[in-house]
Figure (cartoon, one colour):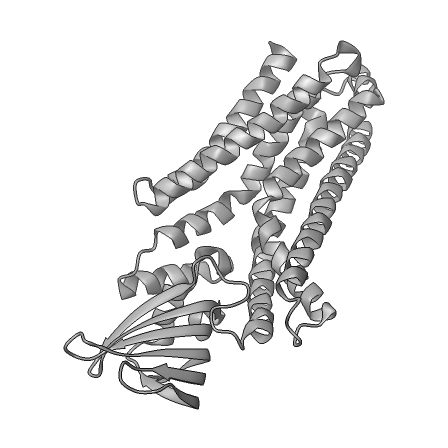
Length: 365
């Protein structure tokens, strides 16, 4: 019986992995295609953007987008797997051999747990590094137009004050968590808070004690426009402070998050977003397990009993409600109204307990 169970377990685990990876690959290819078409539209007037560079940029951008959809890939993959097994009556044969539902979903649970661990410790750092590389390539394509091209939300803002006065820096794009910026606009004020000048620059990099701007155009109220190849702007900011200001939790890899949390605390910056991301990555393997539980609870009914469409819709609906719950808890945590640990683990507990209770009712109720 142990040999039969192990053989069946390996078979069910293989079928689940094939289905989950198939869904993951399909969504990946779809996202790459959509992002590539959008990038082609944006770069159609740029001579510096070759088709290969645009395709490579889209390819590097997608992994981080797909990371957020990984739980739904597991949910849809598990539903596809179990519905296919039910349609071919393989679950009937397994039950006839004395294998309970808990036994033939255990391989999928173990596989989902392993996939989640690999996603946290391997895929997340890879997607963060590829996202940084895509930012560098975007800056190379769009760097000649300040504020143009593909921007990160509404851009990045930073305020610095030194003995020369105040400078407000806006950058369209950020690389290396803010150490290198492109598409810049700088508003400078003197020590009396009076407007001094506006500076537009192609790019800027942080050096010890100063910013180095390249491709500069300087605008003042009573003088014509001045163009310079480069200029320096004094600053008291350190690379650590800039990284804490410009980086977002999603662009920091799992292995770097503890040091970012520690440095942010010592610098007086808010750490709620970093803490939430860290605990979400730790909880990710168990979230994938919860998704398998939800999928199994709506997919183990035999085809001859009917109601398959309702089961599929209920599974998709449960996944959507779990996503809404995770977004609500995430917003509450970032607003410091909920502890990051509770915000990260609440969707896992709700999804896992819902699937467990549904399976318990179906099997033993």
